[in-house]
Image (tube, rainbow, N blue to C red; front, side, top):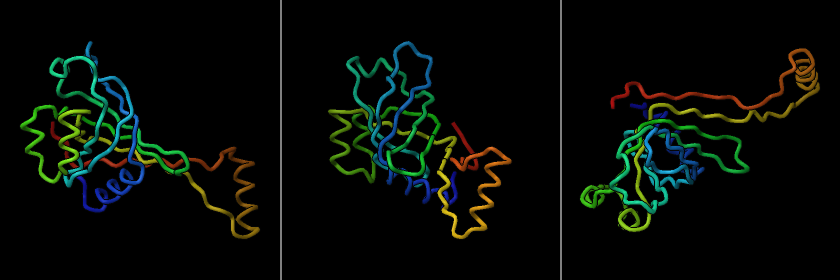
Length: 168
């Protein structure tokens, strides 16, 4: 379970990016292929709800639960998110109808065009680019000396957010 501040930050970043690359980490022979995913909702428990393209095969032949990863990124943004967890396919019409808080448009789309997936988050890696301009000549000299002696360019800083307890 995430604390309130982490959950709000997490929801804001996903809402800002909206689309992700979905990676199915299952070893099954028949699995949902890697594809683009569209985030629909992040609930109060920290589960990410998103849509993936419906495959041509019968959906009942696929595993209902498997390990997955979402890589949220958008050109022009100075951050990205990598989220790992256990994905669950929501394909049963009764389960779709019972979803509280989901608009009717989302439910209709889940019944016909695409597959609704919920991802129970185990690990979030938030990475942002350090972009701080030097304000005065002392900071410019300091940055130059750091670059000269440490051979490090300012780049991306990773942050990892994990729920307090994870139960599968």
